[in-house]
Image (tube, rainbow, N blue to C red):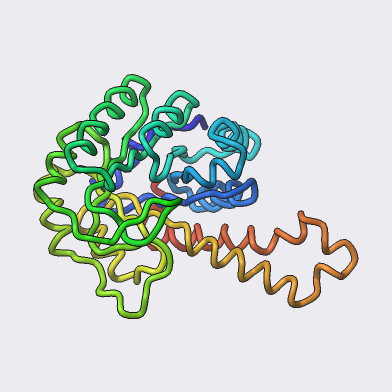
Length: 288
């Protein structure tokens, strides 16, 4: 199946009260794992590259070619969108030109008027090319490739103004953070989420920092309009843990256990398993 825009899959998720998993990739193994997990779950999926991960992998063109070719070679039949995560303006434009089917322009660190103006430009160029757009209001806590957010709560009035630019889905700060959640985390602000949902006319909402949020809060967020949930840190954690276990058990010293195809296999399978579990959590299994 060809890569698709995320607009339709998230519209269906919003109407059906489930969420599409958006999983960040960092290499060949992770990309295969995400695709395998989605295919085995018969679920729509978004594969994301951050600016830093794309640079690590060789650039946006390499990322696009990798995902596109794996969809063909693996016989993937579920809808897949290739999405730029937390992109700056120039990166969003470049990804649209390269062939990404969805982009996030993250101007949350800019003065709001500038964020709004650049969002309108990205939307105009993206929609001409059939590409879906995500923008952010109220920075997400933690750090994502150098973009640091304190985790403040988004202003519903600003969310409405951003929604009215024609973006396809909206990321808004509701107390969520990137990375591991601290023990004193106050939890998601559902009061803020409900206020945002009430003024954005059914626009699919995005929950960043999906790693580590308890299942009950995930389900409540979906009930309040969250239709896309980002997962990255948990994939990194399970990949590292499985790889560490393989090495600590000295399996890399047995026969040709040092072969990267064997060395990376446990971590890759761990990502497959996590993707399938989170798809269950998000309610998108068999929604392809």
